[in-house]
Image 1 (tube, rainbow, N blue to C red):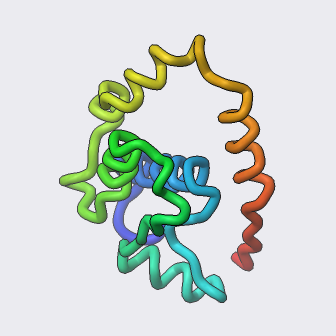
Image 2 (cartoon, rainbow, N blue to C red):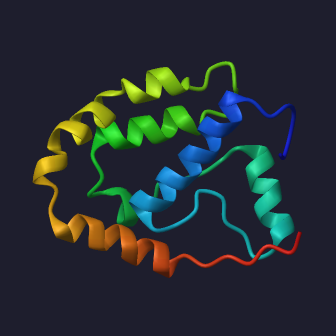
Amino acid sequence: MILGEFDEKSDIWSCGVILFLLLSGTAPFNGLTNKNIHERIVEGHYEMPLERWSHISEEAKALVKKMLEYNPEKRISAADALEHPWIEETARATENVHKEAFQEVLRNLKAYKVVFDY
């Protein structure tokens, strides 16, 4: 836990970080040291560089932004996230998912390595 209390909105934030990573292959909060990373998390500022996000749908980007909303009171709820158009569209398309999409997610996970000194 970085700030405040741990609740459903904290889980949504964590899921937003994971979704950001799965879609782009990078973490939303980067830095050279754990201290730098922690500072960026506390600031709540992240970017979606065009080179990583140009092929991601606007609906997916919108969900990530709602999940990474800095103010927990404005952050999307779990129930609303499950009803988000991108989630519903993705669920409908599950039968038609191409193997390449899964392979890209696996490549992104393998490429992402972070060492935390907690």
